[in-house]
Length: 89
Length: 289
Image (tube, rainbow over all chains, first blue to last red; front, side, top):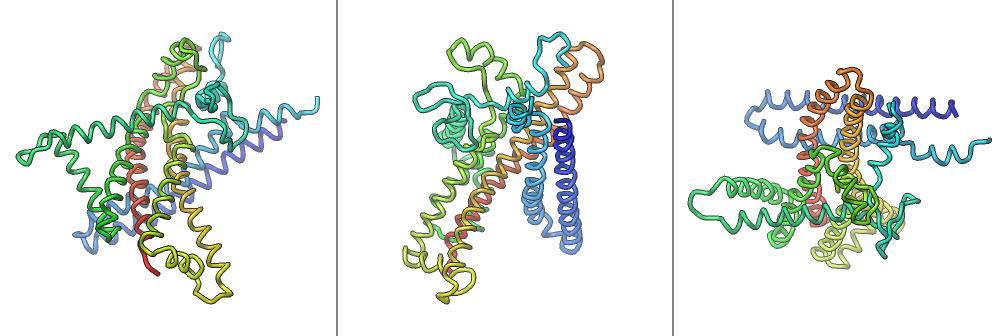
């Protein structure tokens, strides 16, 4: 039982951590390119900004879904009931 | 955390707050057992989303009724700006004038409706459930209430499925049944008969992936937001139950403020993204290959 709970805790950490790495790389690449592009052509800045926010939302979504799943497992593990019911007495 | 044994533990609190008020079709209170269960519906999401939809339509209707061609009032100006925003996006994605007459308003309503549903996250997380805690059982309902309709997978997948149906409709309408059928079996790789099954498989995967990710994205963001608000509320709860350590109360206020500010961005952005993707998917249905 303790082993399983420990593994779930580790899994939650990995979900959030790897998701954060991916989302950060994505946002960083896009933000950098946005700054470069708007330094080259400042008149396109407003147009690009809307698109950047859309993409930021898309990149963020995968990470936030991961966070939600990790938090769900950390606080209200849906498998715990089955696990407790099937524990050898 | 439940020092006096009176309050629920943190895990019980979260589990309780993540339970929908569920009814089956003869209006008995039930609890969902399987992940997919078509014999019940989430009554709370249904009621809140309907009310917010009516509110959205009413607000727009009032703006339209009071519209003048002279100097616009503040509300009219706001609605006009919103309308122009959506209209410009629709024009850039959908070239067909006739379908824009239907899809433009659809996108506008989707944007405002989803924004209002997401906005329920900004209502203090325990405010309505606490009222329901006394009002619900008195009216004969179970003591469960989730106030954010978009944090319910049924709502978001329902909306994305509707977008899929609109896409299928426009595929047939623009290209004709034969043209669309030809595209289904020859689109990504080419029209050689050997490639037909692979093309068809790719098309089906594309439709399914689009629809599922469309709904899951909104759901995931709102669900995460709601859950974090609950966890922040737990900090205040821990302070109230144990009556020790002001740091918990301070943490509640600080973390709550920061997450609210970030979440204001997220709810607008997700509503906007849902609208944009609706337009883009329907625009793709107009493309001829």
